[in-house]
Amino acid sequence: MLIATWNINGVKARLESVLTYLRQHQPDVICMQEIKSVDEGFPTAAFQDLGYNVATHGQKGFNGVAILSKSPLEDVVRGLPGDDTDVHARWIEASVQMGERMVRVVSLYLPNGNPIDTEKFPYKLAWMKRLYARAEQLLAEEMPLVLAGDYNVIPEPEDAKRPQAWVNDALFQPESRAAWRKLVNLGLTDATRACHPGAGIYTFWDYQAGAFQRDDGIRIDHMLLSSQAADLLKASGIDRATRAQEKPSDHVPVWIKLAA
Image (cartoon, rainbow, N blue to C red; front, side, top):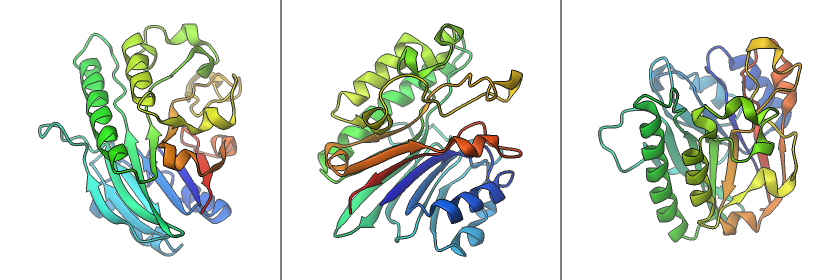
């Protein structure tokens, strides 16, 4: 089973690029973030024509997450539990069939948190606490679990070309990184790092100042696997080529292959 995650930075702006990617790579499941569309405006039919079932949790103009699967999507949950006042569309989860077993897949878009001297940073940290609590619940079910998406966290200095440039950014604050470590320490496996240790692995390049051409990137899009999913991990990768396309997203797809 091939599962991909991609912050597409606007489904309507990036539709042809996404459709081309799906035709070329044929992922069984793809998680999307920043669809920037209400559910009714999502181009569901275009993806159904390629054989995908579609579940979205949308929001007008910003945020928004989706899961597309060639298998039916079951037990869909929209919204991260723990705060009924949070109206941001940043979380969707569903179960999909993989061979004789079911896999729980989450598409998440963690808050950016900038500027750090505003209410946005405490919101990010509170959201990460809710993520931790929900991950605990899902892990207790002992179903293979894939937590995929844009985490807006640079876990380690090696995850940035110039880590010193991010020391005042919410993505690289000690509190953000500590919350990431606490989450991983639940027993989750960082699929990219499991397959590609070392520096130079990035998933995001800013649009400004020729960042991609200079490979001035950061790694903030992650796929965390439960032990049951990690036992099935065969490969993981990052599809950098999409960043070189015309009118690209500033993020690129991250993928894993799981044994059926």
